[in-house]
Length: 295
Image (cartoon, rainbow, N blue to C red; front, side, top):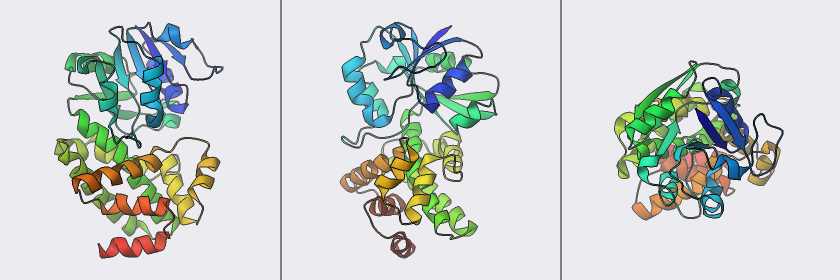
């Protein structure tokens, strides 16, 4: 099987490595890189099976400028909400492809560990379960895959956990202790579920790999860019400085703004995400903690 990976960042490279255990994999990116099996975009787009590992914030513009539908089957491996429009990734992709040609990857998956063939378990989500099974079969033995049709649950969990991860980084950066972090993650999971259920997500999605699994991973390790954003904020650094040091996209920064805007419009209670957004905007993290304990 030939698979094309669109996105040559760390996650795209990790997916290329993993999928190449069973399939012939080619990869492309916005700028030419010295990557194994690199091909120009025009060649990749001719493949039947494609994996998109693009940053959420550029997805709509990229598809508008580059994508032409030729009955490709797509696995979306990105997570986030478009901050400009408040749209979930599935809403964006469905403007360019039929639902039946789309699937979405979720679950705990640090690129660095995938590149070492360390075991994990992921979920392939799609309304087309046959397509989900096809993509599931492409993954190597060290990645156990499950199938789900709860796309909106996977989407909201995958996006929201990045915001809670920033909060967790702040918590640890302030030295608040294990009790505080455990409490934060437990309430963060409840908050994620509340937000997702408003849009029709299933409760079990948040208790599984896509929700709790991905949240616990992203919110507890310096391998997580969003967690490191929180650590920087706790040290009093400005967000621009933190992002420059990271040199990578931290989707939670943009997702926090999108979630706060959506929640305000829909009247959804999101105390943790709301405070994360305020800290990103310059509020003192300790004052944010005081307000969160009172809410």
